[in-house]
Image 1 (cartoon, helix red, strand yellow):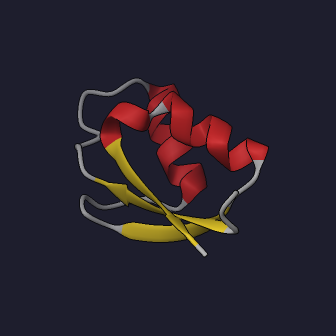
Image 2 (cartoon, helix red, strand yellow):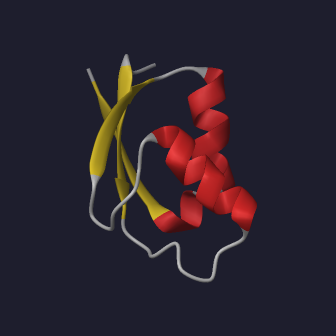
Length: 61
């Protein structure tokens, strides 16, 4: 299991449900093509799964 995840927003939040926009905000993603590094834990994995169709995720050691 990786120690952290590099998460990139690759699809727009325009027209998405409020829940999906709030999840992206909780992950620290505000702009298209923005990348953040988050710890790899069940809470972050759950948020990534919820909006996986909008993201590109890489495992980082």
